[in-house]
Length: 458
Image (cartoon, rainbow, N blue to C red; front, side):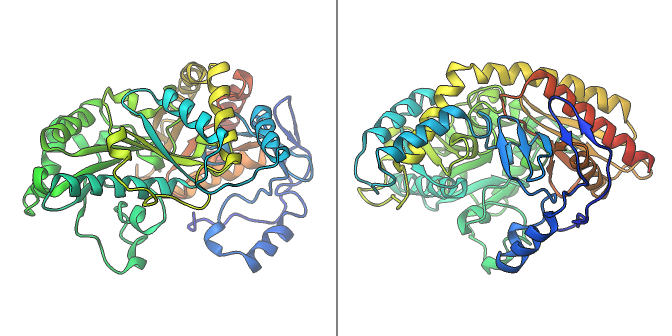
């Protein structure tokens, strides 16, 4: 996101007043610059670069600033607010714990944790029988790495390699960042774990007539040419459930071929479900679209409904590889987040939000396809499933990816009362709360279309 600098100066924009949006000041609203400059002085710049909107409050699928401007939220912060911002049930659950009072109890037992883990395991279903709770998604990824390598150690593999997919993203801690193929972003580490390997992602435009199975074979043969034996040298596959930046899902055959290779060679199969879990894709977890059975899933984001909750779920014999005290954390499974997590599961189930995400996803993608047909010179692809989508933009002159145009569209959307995910490249991502009304969903896509038309004509 460092590639585009959004103006913090208030711009006079048309006022908007609908049931779902309200723009009644210049945008960014007066006072925004002052707050962002205060943050500049005291906060690491790594936290900066977003669209210049200072949040004052957020409710359900709307965001408000201090001037009471109101946005339709197509971000869910960053795919966190699956059950809606400031969900009443989640808020009540947290308040009940605070009023007890009980904020934290380290690894000592508490009833809330027991109840939540029982319900979480039931929600995930077979083959998952145990879970380990953490605070951030990248911690869950690290725990997944540890469990895969401990399994390889247990069975006596020669090495403890992990195969990842180029372009996938798993977090910013050291191990998680090594799983990324972005050399520049992991250059700070100073070395690369020689037992972390990458194979190409099967983009639709990369297959070029090659079957998904053959594409995987080519990637694995490249590793074989480096002396890597799957049965002896690989502990696990770590896969982001879809390619995050563009909501690009794998061909089903590609992942089924990976699963077959895992079973044949004694390799664990793990999915990073940070963005895709807890109903986001119209299934409880995104891996279900592929008709495969992973050994581990690493979760976060929508898991806590807005509080810092993440976790790893797996088969009991894998989850119990670490000895007592060997995998714990100060704030893991504290009563506050467990109560929030329980409320999230109750909301998903009682309001049928997973099936609603599938239904609304059909509505979303039909309208986005209409935009693609309206702007074929600008929109190259619409990708995703359920309530996660990406619109990819290209230059009409060259056909190449057009990040600058995309940033301008995202900024114009903000000026019109719609907040989208600005990726910093040629994609705009869309991931509203699963609770968004059909009317607001359609209105948001209409605003996106207006923004594209206006920037295209400028």
